[in-house]
Image 1 (cartoon, rainbow, N blue to C red):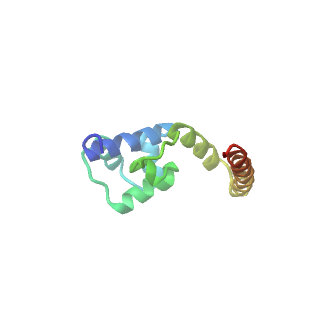
Image 2: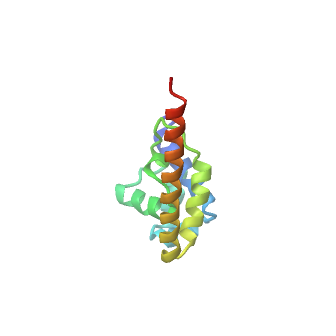
Image 3: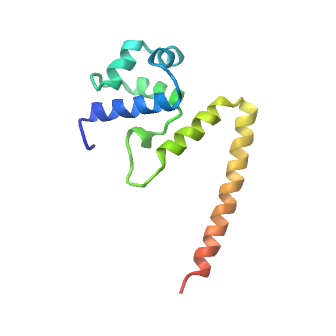
Length: 121
């Protein structure tokens, strides 16, 4: 990681929390963690357990790539925006969104693959 791993992790958690428009208290209440734990993680003073990370990842709607980035470029800001909207929906609408997104992705991939094929030498 580019900087101290706990500081890097804390910045990622803090950024995701703010994207969800949550205070530290709200995140603590919703994840079942103590506010002090959230504060310590965000400041890079605490090495969270796997269980703690799972609680935060679940509530914030972030992927492991957000915390442990891969080399593939991803627009995390846009992803966080849409995940926030997704989690604001009820279960029925979440299912509808997933089905719609699957359909759109399949269509876009088909167009992309046909375009790649048409442009090949």
